[in-house]
Image (cartoon, rainbow, N blue to C red):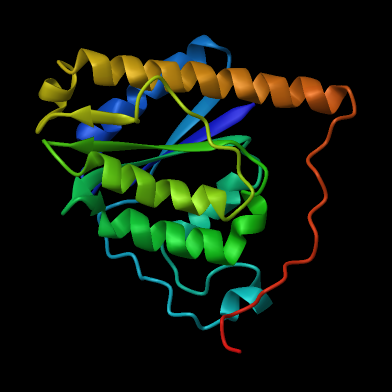
Length: 206
């Protein structure tokens, strides 16, 4: 079993990475394979709604999104991490997830996911709620922890002093490992993910 941890910060080894590493350690201690995937610090295009992904099976834009999707096909779970910018997730992770979920959500569907956020002081719960919405629209079980998944600090060294935040990260990793093992045991007993109906799309025009 493998979990991909996505670092949505422009800083490869900053506060978000520090939090993800704590989750990663817990996962590894439970025998789960991991990979930290950095979205990078180069521009990531937002979705332009062109619909090319329906024909190509991937997003037409060339950046880290398609690299992630290739890895996601064989992954069993996901942790998405972001710094808090103006009480919201980073622009990079937002564009990244918009395109990943819109173009290739079928490769994520049914797989457990969670997000973690890193902030200096405020805005963590708003960013946390924002990222959870990607999972709830894509049939993905959300893994919880003992508190909202946030760490506080302006540097990696300060994050390491946030004992409660780091414990929340470890609990999240343990809970993710437990759920993955439960899903594996269920599949071995013939319990599979439910078949979904064809989507019904309506609007409010009468």
